[in-house]
Image 1 (cartoon, rainbow, N blue to C red):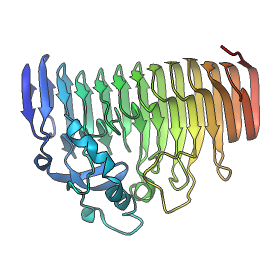
Image 2: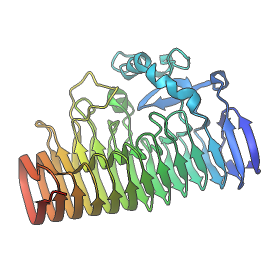
Image 3: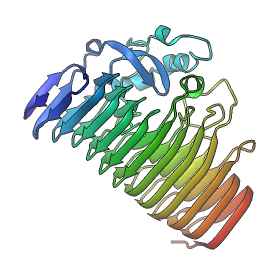
Image 4: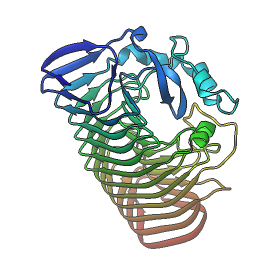
Length: 389
């Protein structure tokens, strides 16, 4: 399916197997702002299955689907963004649906009253997904959202959006994902790896695994590279390399909280450049607070085998923060060859087996280096100094 140069207005596009939606250079596709144009479909909304408005581009149970070319897809998401202020009651109802025994087919939210915004591009249960070359701007909510997919490639894509929760890319309970050469400027996380939320994530029980992210540029996200907080199905085997991060709140961001359960393990991040971050350059946080999805359980998550090396940060609110739970410390963290310049230094609590090797920090304020309840601390060539401007 070829979209030639020109401006085109459309409703939702539902792809089938072996279809390549190709946008030629100069093609601009704008999506309808009439809510009624988007029929109800099965989706996963912030980690919970339900029936909601169709994503703007949607494929379900397909093989070999692609969106490619040099054109632009404009979600005209401004028409949906104000729903963020009204989604609270419906979102809370959905988050607790599994705990209350409500089956998926009865979780119907495709109404203006519920105000749950659709994703821009969602592939659900597909095998062989390619998104390459295109530019996506201003989606209603999450931009590129593969769910339960195998063999996903996102290459040379540009995402620009400033609306609420307009993440750039959310691999969600997927297997074998390659992301390379992409540019993200987003209203929320640039890339966020997920696997379901709380009880519904445990029910589905599908991890997101074997994810490679390389040669990407990320700016102005809440987090540039995030795992969680919806990681209840597990995340494992993630490798991130050769990325440039500028502006935004946090750089490398692993986030969870009591009630999520789930396991994050085998995360490798290397050769990252960061600058001008408002908060932490690196943060591993089990006390994530900015969540509209509290669990009715206290099941703690597990973080283990986290390896970060070759990071240079020139300007951040804080260099590094690691916060495990007292009942579930973060396990086996290696930080190596880091050069961090920030307003505040390093804070670590509730960590088992923390290795700091060749870490240099220049900070302006206290704390310079503060650790509590860290068992098995190994530090060599650690130099963190306070130097006021």
